[in-house]
Image (spheres, rainbow, N blue to C red):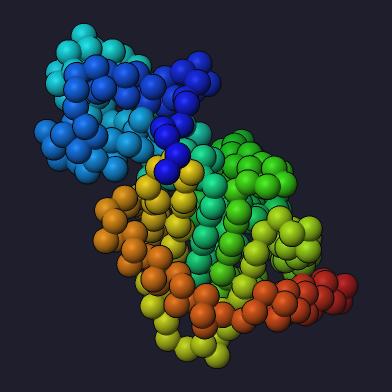
Amino acid sequence: MPGPKKLDPSSSPRALLGAELRHRREGAGLSQEELGLPLFVSGSFIGQLESGTRRMQVDQAEKLDGILETDGFFVRNCAALKKSKYPDHFAEAADAEAMAGEIREYAPQLIPGLLQTDAYARAVFRAYQPTAPEEVINGLVAARLDRAQILADPTSPMFWAVLDETVLRRRVGSPAVMAEALRHILALAREHRIIVQVLPFSAGAHMAMEGQLKLMSFRDAPPLAYLQGLGSGTLHDDPATVRHCELTYDLVVASALSPQASLALIESVAEDYAHEDQQF
């Protein structure tokens, strides 16, 4: 089993806090489980703080300063972690996503954020905030496209998406926007950068009908599951919850079209949108 990841304390506020937390905990002779008890969190959660995959909250920082007698170090440095270009409910998941070695996602309504084009993302955010100033929409789109840069690495993370057929059929923006968005997914798949499958309408009822699911795995930290709802999202590290989410994803995959058949369907729908655009 690999040892703890060597964090560079200068690389980010999370890395700084993670490295210092590990140093202080080990200096105090505490295991991750022992330190987690007074914080009412699991030992795996402490491990995720130390590895930088979880974002330390201010109330946790206050308790850690008291337990480890760190003279306010964690509270002072935790403030830097509060600054994020993402909504509060997604900020911690975005941090974890950027460090994951494997990401698996079921998308019931929209193309996953990591796969969206500029025009598609713009149409999504304008629908979410119909009266927002253009500069607000521009900022949201820029942040989403910046997230997608993790796919520029040819080897990591491994990204596997299952798209409900609704994602293909729901028109977001114009037919041209949809054609471009679907062809972007096709290009990523054909470049062997992602794995994509489609869950067809013919699959009927399934275990993930209640919403979006994202699973993230890490080289040196326990896996996480992120469940998203309307303007909300929850990151889970409880092993039983994560296992249930993994089973859910596996069953969705079992009901989905093969990758080859999925690409053929995506291409067909993209061509339909392109043809429709030419008629306008």
